Amino acid sequence: MATGRTHRPATRSRGIPEATVARLPLYLRALTALSERSVPTVSSEELATAAGVNSAKLRKDFSYLGSYGTRGVGYDVEYLVYQISRELGLTQDWPVVIVGVGNLGAALANYGGFASRGFRVAALLDQDPALTGRTVAGMAVSHTDDLERIVTENGVSIGVITIPAGGAQQVCDRLVAAGVTSILNFAPTVLSVPEGVDVRKVDLSIELQILAFHEQRKAGEDAVTPAADLPVPPHTTPRKGPDGDVPAVMPA
Amino acid sequence: MATGRTHRPATRSRGIPEATVARLPLYLRALTALSERSVPTVSSEELATAAGVNSAKLRKDFSYLGSYGTRGVGYDVEYLVYQISRELGLTQDWPVVIVGVGNLGAALANYGGFASRGFRVAALLDQDPALTGRTVAGMAVSHTDDLERIVTENGVSIGVITIPAGGAQQVCDRLVAAGVTSILNFAPTVLSVPEGVDVRKVDLSIELQILAFHEQRKAGEDAVTPAADLPVPPHTTPRKGPDGDVPAVMPA
DNA sequence: CATTGTGAACACTTTCACAGCT
DNA sequence: AGCTGTGAAAGTGTTCACAATG
Image (cartoon, rainbow over all chains, first blue to last red; front, side, top):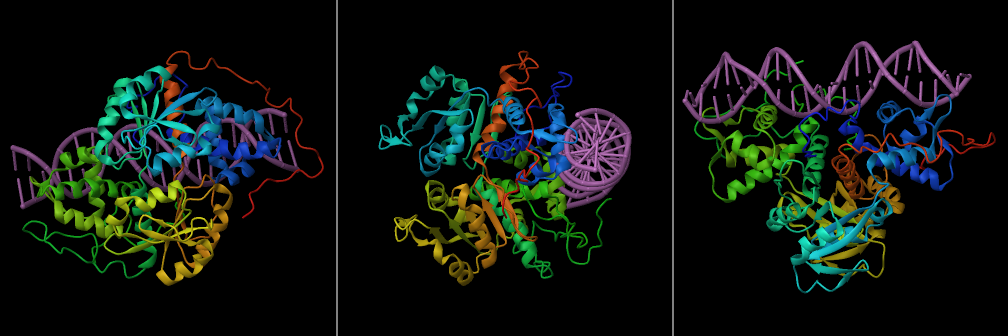
């Protein structure tokens, strides 16, 4: 979420829908697996199944990249891998810093799928002196004090924040000031950044809450929380809830 | 993103848009912070800013829940906290199992925002004998062998998968067979589940790739990868042998 | 009169269905 | 004959702008 782009790129054809971009990595992963099994070509149907989407969507997605398939045959696996990698910018090297070397930061540092695509962990940073100097995932942990130097020297443009919510905005500000323009935020807080900086958020607690919502629906197929209302009335006047016998007012 | 619901719930007015559901936890978090500061009421504008959305969207979202605000005044913080919690199903207790106690599993087990809302870690499971018996986040790690028993005895309906991709589908199948109907999957693989089971996916590598895409755009504002093509032409490559080309579909 | 609640307009995404190529 | 590529339709989500209202 939270992609800063508010204005149309306007650069004519160069418009790959955001929803498509979000699926390209999925296709790429499925294609890589096929490639490793030396499968030469794949149909939209097969690839879609492997990626967990439907074939119409996949074809539409690919149509934004160009005409890379062969009618009657399918897609050349190697060729597609290359095209998607290029489109995603994975043919170049992306140095990344991870700020916060707790369990989550360590998990990321150890994560293989990281380095395998163009990402390279340039540094692990933590402000805890007990950690700095230690080695995590074969890499020395630097002190957060060196953030600016490390970002600058390594030309880091992507930062990953894996510290508690409290310090996240400050670290974010420092990353941005040092030149980082893309941030992957695991801290459960809203980061504010200047125009032109992208923030993506991964929030474990939110994911669970969304699951709980659906889970609740399943459980109470009929006992849908008995119209229940207010343990505390709103302010002074009783309010109307959406439930009870209120006739559906949903617009078309 | 993968929510199994393919058919409209159809149950009359009960239709909260998925996009709205995904934002409710955000509002809830902002409201909880206000509540802790004993702020009694908040306007859509203020709350929207705190949650990182715009006020029109927030009001529209809330309108699906009911009319919980007061014109000219705003929303009663406590009341909204309760209503959203109830809507999300957080007024009840959700026992959760975490399968895989590596760094990521440990990070989740230690994550506070977990227990604070209705979620309770019923068990940590791992198949590594070196881990079972150990204590992580103040909780004993059980062996994966006991998965079925633990899920059944605790009435667990939500499972979190934090093991490598290889074993994920198998664990998923066992969870589902034991009665779990919602799964949060951190393994970089597509899980197939029966109708009625929800899967949400958190994929670190995908998030980074999406950032890289946008990052690339920024960098090459004009040098937009010069139409560049083929290190391998599209289909000079001879395709599959006419014999038995394997239709590459991941085993279920 | 500040602020909510919401139709209506707009934008984006998915799905359909089939023409067009190989 | 088989499969891609894509307009057009349908569905979902966002924003606008203002009437309703405490």
